[in-house]
Image (cartoon, rainbow, N blue to C red; front, side):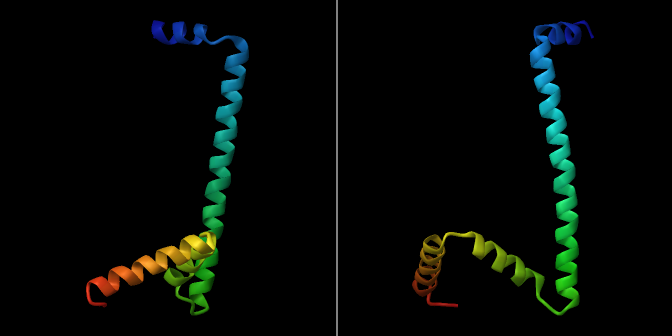
Length: 88
């Protein structure tokens, strides 16, 4: 415990305030992140309830995030590798 008190003394008042502020911001963002994850789960559940394949939806979302050139390069490599092993 004495080491903890000594460690706290090392941080000046300004650093302690900054550290507390940073920790509180991280905690708020973690709460926001959890709320967004819950919202996403609900949207995917709705999509599934409407007959959409959620695995494919996730893939479409992932592909839309990618740069078009990078996606085309990846597709070309997949085609190359498949042809190299004799296809599917």
